[in-house]
Image (cartoon, rainbow, N blue to C red):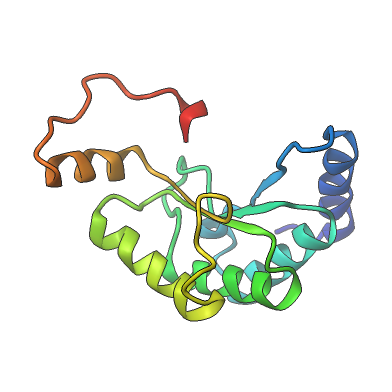
Length: 149
């Protein structure tokens, strides 16, 4: 956001360099803070060029997390640059309808067979609660470990 693009790319590349083989490097772009479609595209491109295995929309701790517009931009960059890179929508995906909309965008851009557990994920405990309610179960009384996402 401050224009230090080389610094951001260097940080991701340095993280990639110290990751042991088989470790998945997720790069969180905080797209709600970027807001500008050009900035989201450039950040996505830089992350992929620097070695990201996954692009994630948000930490889920900012006022604006995942948006369909940001997802569309990020998935388009993944499609054009490296379809092996995964995508994680995080922050604001609270309902089955929300999740369905993100999956529809992924299907449209990447093709219907692309979204698998290896390539597409959600970061949303609220979504789990909605899924459990839909299936007739009670939501858990304690939040699951973040490591399980």
